[in-house]
Image (cartoon, rainbow, N blue to C red; front, side, top):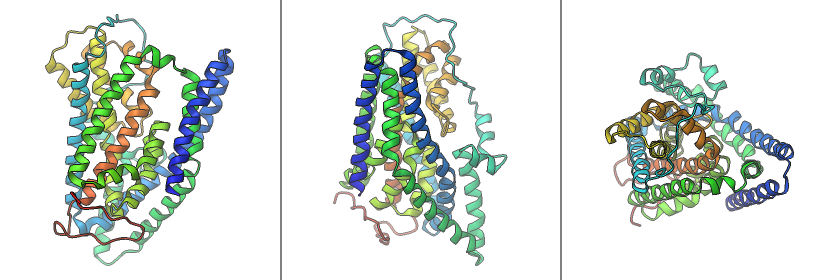
Length: 424
């Protein structure tokens, strides 16, 4: 069944490309083409809305369940290791994008000139103070309604801590309800994911009906170098996975290929999140760890987006022939790194952060509008990379000893597949 689902999504991806290109080249009337795009967009948005319908309660339930069930396994250690991993991965990904862009000199020779055009994005500066204030929800109901993952995460952590305290005093009724809610949301998500091939087909068909191959021909060099940088990051990520998981790292990639297909096709982390939980659990990561680490990764560990932001920022600096010192550029990388932690759940979040930060370093806002033309193509790659990064992070952290002694095997759970020891 698992293989059939992955094959169906891959087939939908290929079919979407074919249908989209056919529609683009066979419809010369722009109004007719726009109508076709609207039809595909409507179908894709219906699927994404179904995902958003379950994502907020799923994050809340998995976080709370993870806290109350993982406490005896060393909750503090899991949290600290997770944040250290996420911070390290973000720095590596950001510096990789910055370094590759400089190494390949992306954007040099374009000699762009500033115009009065606007990017059209609602981009607000993400200063540290605003970021910290926005972490705490004024209303949990509002945070749920608006799918604000960071705010849901903060509330769920406080709720889980309070529930854990009551559980230690002998009250466990709400904890049992939360565990059942998690099971219900996962089952409900399974029903929604039956429609994943339809959503994938519609999203891809819409993009290629609208753009065709023109976007590739116009921005071919930028797209090729960006995907080359992503490929290099994938190699590094897989190398780290092999270091910690041994040969099981390759089984991990096979296990999460379906959510990665979904992430790539829909350019939506939300769309892939529920299936990624299921895939990691089947791979052998303890559900308690998955329920705690993965939602945090969804908010804090966006490796593909981080690489894209520093890569795109460097591209624009080179394209406009701006004389900005390496020190200032590294400062830009640092600000992008900090600002990126608030973009989960924001449509085209990586591009919005770029639009908010780079003008402060002299890059014209019109430059971001250039990236907007091909952002869908770029977003697909960076979202799949985010999915891979979170899958590896959760699997590695799940394998590390927490409450148990190092080397002590965890108890096998029903439906789980034990992770092979490194070097096996």
